[in-house]
Length: 273
Image 1 (cartoon, rainbow, N blue to C red):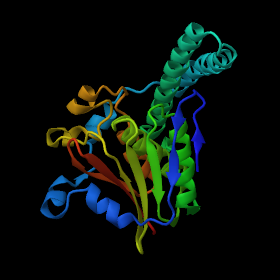
Image 2 (image 1 turned 60 degrees about the vertical axis):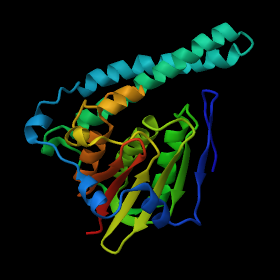
Image 3 (image 1 turned 30 degrees about the vertical axis):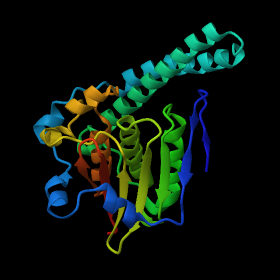
């Protein structure tokens, strides 16, 4: 399955239904005692969550509306000025940066929703879900916003009774995080494990990894590791926090195994009961 990039860059998204999850994950994650030491559960304290500054949903909506217009009209003008390199380059910057702002507002919107009091959070809408189908849609959407030509490979099949929207919300955040902190043209693999009591989804990248001294901060809002800043990737530091909270609503968890400068394997687990 190929996805074309609306901003002009080429993004390759490949899905391999014949491969198996095991061999890739064994070579992508530490094994034995090293893996047990590096397997970090998502965690944060109520005080840290309650202290998170949140924009009201109404403010996010008011910001998003004009930004959507700016992004859309810039794309239209960009297509009409292909023969004027200087104008086209300037519009490409507007399209790229307005797209980044749109993504940030989407993350802030998710943060506002998932950080609301429990009674105000939208309850789970559980149904029989083809996990691969949802993962394909998420991978295609993330690839369409990726200017750095990462190769996203989907492996395996799985079905589960769950909240498809929450799962897609979490996988989008994890997959976006993987390509954000991985070198251009590198591979990200999404592997599905259809277990008896739970479904596991592994997102393996070839990126900068996570240092041990950043382990306690990975799932906190507005936090980014030192090597993430050194890598030069930009972001609000909300993706993994949002993913963890979205999964928790449906009884799921998010953990990771990492080796700095080699890559990270994030594991989404959703129970069958």
